[in-house]
Amino acid sequence: MKLSTNNSSTRSALRDIYKMPAGPDRMARFLRLVDADIAQYPLDANPPPAVAAAHEAYLSAKSVALQTAEGVETATEAAGTAAGADLSAAMQSIQAGKITPKSTTQPKAADAIAAALTFTTAAENLVGEAQAHLVDAIQEAWPEWRPQIIRDAAAARVKAAAATKEAAEAVATGRALFAAVGTLDNEVLSRDGKLLQAVSDETRQGIPWFASTHIGLSPLQTVSIPHGKTPVVFPLDAVVEAVAAAVADPETFPASDWTPLSDPGHADLLAAPLDLDQPWVRSAIRQEWGDTCVVCKRGGADVAVEVVGAAWPWAMAHRTCRDKAPDPKAQKRAERLAQMQQHGFPPSPNEASQIVPDGQRVQKDTGF
Image (cartoon, rainbow, N blue to C red; front, top):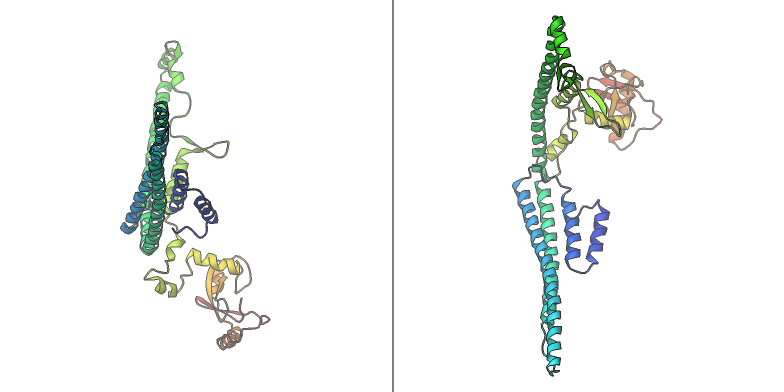
């Protein structure tokens, strides 16, 4: 069996299970633990055939394990019945004056229990092997399965965008039509006083009919969204339009820019130049560098730049600073320090920091 190395509580629970005597109780705890471990995988996300087959094999092994546990219970019940039958037969023999013991059925029943317990242990081992096979199948399919999930997610977003846009339009249309009923009634009655009086006086089994049916808002006006103990009420059209806009925005998915080590294209992607416009690249650089511009030293830097001759070749700069003309003195110093680094001499931390932008690249004369 292969459990997550990050889940010490699961491994501890497994050790406790193995300390229990073989039987239905141990089997039940064992299967709950393995099921919970496997449930951490997204097996409902259209897995590849090999993974689906391994999962089916695991479920089959689990079914057999449950049957072996039932076999122990059946054998235990049979042993109890055998003990009662042997006792009754012995009493009858004594009453008949036959006190020489005869063979009983209890030993066979005990053997049946022992055999059933052995089967439960064997079934546990088979479940563990099936779980390990499933884990191996998932790891092998990882490079194939992962991008497929990303593609499926993107396709689902496109469908959701179309559906939410249609829903927003339908809500707006329905809201206007429901409101139009009240508007029509009021406008007709406002132009005919006698008709208004007649409608107002009319009752239905004692209840004012028109007034009672024209109280409150028409449908599709507001929505109540749970928020703690007190729900918050928002205009429905605003909520639906906001959802539609959020779903329609493809945004970026940083995880899609990484591939597993076993992916055939991993090495090529690893060696490919970084796209400094990617949000995850800017975020990673900002975490190390902050938002201080590497050129003007002021905050609010909004673009990532490559720094030539620095120990860590990335920094942040303002878009306007990035395109400034080079400083000849600073560029010369950066080149000298870069040569020192190439020969194994790191730049002194006391070196003055002069930055030289050069298109998309910025030269700096010290590590940072």
